[in-house]
Length: 319
Image (cartoon, rainbow, N blue to C red; front, side):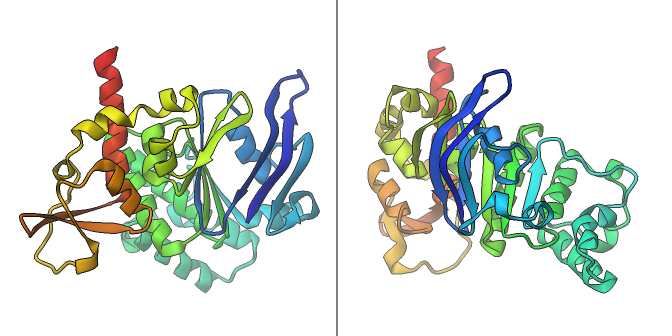
């Protein structure tokens, strides 16, 4: 879907922000770029839709060089969500969402239907919110509008540049959960920039960790937790060894409403962290038993969130 081939970005002052980077993002993948400030993650993101020109190398979208696309054609097929929500304050929510469809000359009935569909998708009643102005919404609601505005013209690719980092922790976690649920419905290719390892582990299909313009490790959350490439990765993610020693599935579970669980998706509560991670590389959701009774269920996002939180608590303990 998106391929970086020997991509370098050097700014006029001589700073090399991205240095000979190679990777490929699959169609429908949730791909997270992460690393310390100045590592090149946002520069890499902005080169994808030509907000920043690359210096050397080639970026392909659908096997076509981005330089060969008409700039409007390229950007209309790439939704963009910023940390600064950047809704137009004088426009209604409906008008904000409709900007790109109007540029693409959709008819009004189609636009109205699309706005309603998107508002419902993120749990905002169209009749209640359609005619409101951004100032009448909470910051979390505004960011939801920012996300669905990027989806309005049904692009294949969504770029998200630290979209939740300015929110309070509760709103942030809720929006992380929302984007996971939304991705299951829309199955877009999402490239997401963050500096927060908790967020990356929770959201990503694959993570690309950068340092000083180069890729240090690229892999699944499971890879980062169980096989860090070097000490930098280990320090950035945190060590899973001590957490594995103290790991208890009961701490991760979501209680079950009365519902049957498939036999082939049941594991015992005493299962080790290493085995749980291996199971989650193949199964999306797992049911847990204790004394042959089902006590709850969990999925990859729940486990990654638990582990990342444990890493941070472990770090604070040793400060």
